[in-house]
Amino acid sequence: MAKIDLTKTELVWPGKYNEDGTLKEVPRVSLPFQVIETVNESRATRQVAQTTGASLFNTYEGKEGDSFEAGWKNKLIWGDNALVMGSLLAKFAGKLNLVYIDPPFATGSDFSFTAPIGESGEEAHKEASAIEEKAYRDTWGAGTESYLRMISDRLRLIHDLLSPSGAMFLHCDWHVGHLLRAAADEVFGPANFLNEIVWYYYNKFQGNVNRFASNHDVVFW
Image (tube, rainbow, N blue to C red):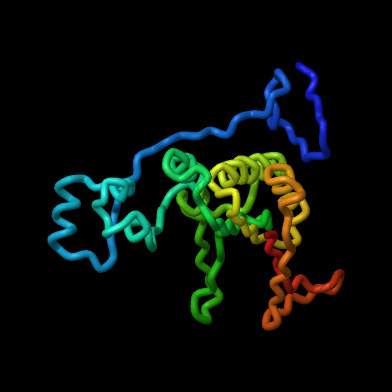
């Protein structure tokens, strides 16, 4: 294996570098978008869209709104955010002014739950669905290694999408906040760290007899 020449302090995990010592590239797959639903859309407009097969990028042809800005207001895009961001690069690289992300906190939650049924003492257990397991899981099979790979890839895509004056806000808590700060420093540069915003939950007390209560989240700017 080639020697990796580290020139700065950084987090390193298995699989971050190729065998020749180069940083692994983030997959940038460009996939087509499809408009599934438009709220408050007229019947006539909906029929035209169904006939022409309008896609998310039709705004570049002036078919959504009177201007580019109007065509891109209030869009909710569903899908794996790495694939979505990779697909947006062709049109939006270096153009986004603001990104807010609320990644999993690595709490170990699997989104299954058990609910009591009435007063009979019986319980119903719900396992996480396939979609929930993929989209909302907060457990990581390979531990910290796979978590860091997931977040680092996405931070690099966000970096490519942000404009030079753009800002990213990263919401996290005590579970992996220290790792996320280090990962963001590596991608964006420590000099671009502006503030650590403490989000205090004044109305939610999480007591613990073994340590102080966890009553806040953190937002890195």
